[in-house]
Image (cartoon, rainbow, N blue to C red; front, top):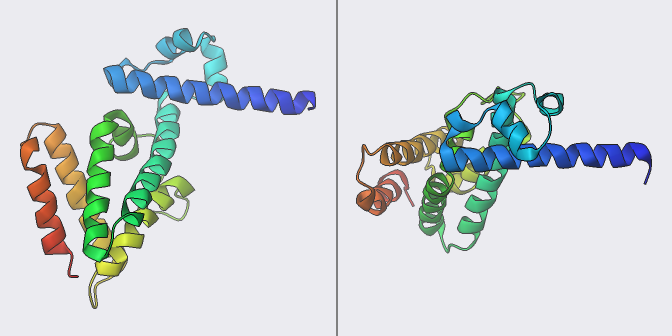
Length: 192
């Protein structure tokens, strides 16, 4: 291995450490607790080293969002692959989505709530974000219905799931009714 390759590997390792540490800190204490000073202390590197990887917290949030989007896509695909039939796939997608939001609240916020400097719904949207939407579209597109644009249907269903996730987490909806809400979504928005 050349010196250049070793340096690149070490740099990639440091970057993964920064992102993992930010994510861990955010999940434990919230995003307000994630500061470059605290990250530098936790990873035992100086702040200038941290800034050599990310210009600030916004870019770190963006990196967590991209990582989380890839994980969300994988979770949705795994759940829908195990389901039998379109209605069961939609129910599995909805459950996997809400489980991800509940199980990884700081990552979910990085993807959907916070400014990570990432463009959404544009040509230059990063691939992990496009793929997360594609994971939803793969399942929901098949139940959009005659004459309904699959992308718009997917956006509408996603918006409903996002609303359930954020309102439940904020205490605006009682969590014990989440299963019934999912049944309603699947029953009313799924035409199969």
